[in-house]
Image 1 (tube, each protein chain N blue to C red):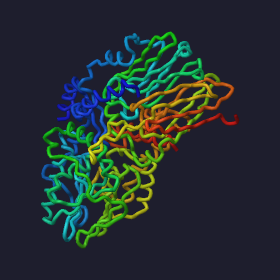
Image 2: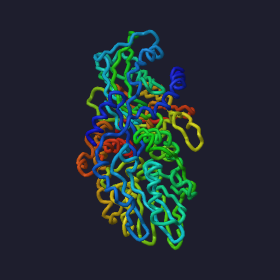
Image 3: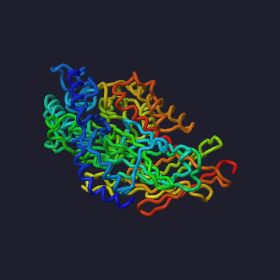
Length: 325
Length: 273
């Protein structure tokens, strides 16, 4: 770099960083949030199995109408305590989840588990700090979230507005999971299984042994087009392994609160394969990233919501990975 | 309700149109100061008092109007054959990036006399003009400009898998692409995280120090194709596709050096040679 660059970097860095928050005007691109809003008297979370409750977030981007309630969040009630799995995309959504728990049980909330680092799954953590739980996540989650924290906050505060975002902050894991481990809620075992890089480099699967319920986080998308922030090859491998592992039901990160396994994996596995296959063909012909973004995976357009928001980005990320094979 | 929101977006758009993608924390945003023209000052910083003239006959720049991934924005520069043999240097500039000068490419004799193309990927930090400026042997500067809507490319980690990125740094692939008998074409890929110095580690409160490829030197049969001197705006895992002239020795040799002083080398030769 020339001296000029260094000088500009200093002069402009402060502007750049503070500007990040001010630059994003908001999210008005989909109407999905409104069309899918449940009836006002519907319970926040549904009991999908004995003692297992799941909330379906809107299939939408962060916008003022949904206050960041755009991902699924769940909790499991044991004899002695409660474990929460993902907390929604703002402290306000986390507070709704907290209320839902308190409408069911007064047992202490001992564990707040995040399935991965994305803001729509972790920003509700703040609503549980007063309970002093262990915040549990994949051992690489803290690093991933830390590196992105400033941007996640700036972007999403801007997207839903100051008021809805109030109280939201980064709450990093206090209990990092290196390898498969178990939590005990009192006569109820929760199994934590950290994964290799797939949707992100910090995906954690949570299982409730008593009911055979698996909380897959964003390893499983339904309705909402998948978003790739890890490895497309790794994701396919994790899904294949998972599909061979029985579960009574699964909770995806986005989509219905309870789904049948392994059938639920079929659409996303198909999407991943289409992208992988089509990109590999282009790479064989020495085609470029620009070519790939224009043509790959278009046949999947009608199969997913939010396709136009995420698909091209997925192709770009997958291409940058697969070109190194 | 939706209708109202859609109307409001038009109002907002007049000031700053934007969208954010939550699950990945990805955003594209218009700069509030998008209308601020910083090019005159930048031009003076980079080229002094020399004139820089828009000249589509000398250089063409292809860039996506809306980039899908701000950390991975493909740019293609085409220099027509009539001009190519007299082009000494190509500069890529992104006006509003923290380090606006992406890279200088200084060409050598092996760059060839036919149409010259160079394609790479850059980070775009906010809605900005992107420029390709070529300097010809007579010392004049010719420019092509494109406006690109993308934001966050410099401060958001593009790294999908941090451990893999660090473990593989310096790994190089050079691929000789099919040629039509005229200019040859090759693609160079180098694994490098290209840390921008603008990525904050919330846990420590410190910025991750900048670490990037400073120089990439490409030679064919001992003659220079180009020497790139670059900065933080070149995307992670730099990827450069370029044309060059054939010769008696078709071996391509690449030497790259990063800001830690580590050097990486690679060679490629046509099959059967």
